[in-house]
Image (tube, rainbow, N blue to C red):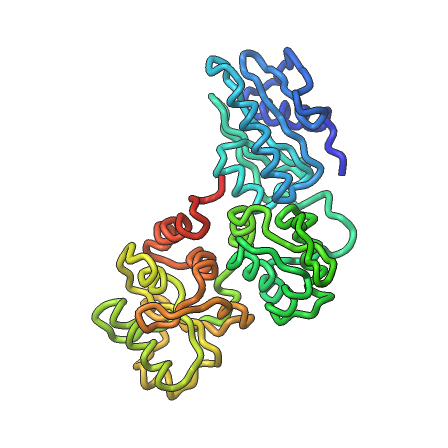
Length: 358
């Protein structure tokens, strides 16, 4: 969809009217140095710098933020500059990226986040008025996410489509569709080097932090089947080891995740809650041997039956306990309690050698 300058300006002025009580007077307008998609205007002494994008795709939002950052750095500090990203509809990932970058945004569907001196406007809940025909591929659905997970766990490498399908145990046609969607959204690109043996381009991640942010924004741990309960234990570490030993002795496939696995990797913070993925439903005899009492409110143990076996991809052993790969651990920490946000931030800095994207 084409986002028109007149629409965007009218929308911003409408929002400013809500604060001031009268329609603001636009005193100056000029095209930006990056072409028609970028322009600025003044209302009084305040300068608004706008970057328009035809969609709210993650890569488009990231590019807009980068543009606005350049403009901000080249603007005199004495000038009050309000950066704004404008799109037809702003999705969850786009909001996250703008929030991290400290950039305002509006969409033509009626939503907005505009914060400036004397102005604070936040509107959400309006549906996307510019949906494209046809059902878009959900690249972060449980099975589809195998592609994202594998690319992120091997982010420094490039793969042919056939190799990627084989490694993720996915149908080549289905894999091709997911890859095309990821590519169209700017998450992956075709490497310049060719797969000489098959004469095909190699696929690699464009920006691992950006792809991880996009997946995490869509990820919901409780889409897995999670049993929450309590097991008597002195500490979280004692519980973690006791459950791991019991699962090992019974020959049950498992992988620890959440705060317990984060502690094993970084020893960053103590924990009470232990979380495990199980390769099979938790049998009554196992729960009885653990002394497990179902109790969501007082739970110190979560047993999760995954909605896709891909969660076990890249799992390895730490201190004799099988744990999910750090990439899976990072997204799982999103829905954990206690100090999970701090644990995720600490873990994130070690994933790609950088802190959170933006």
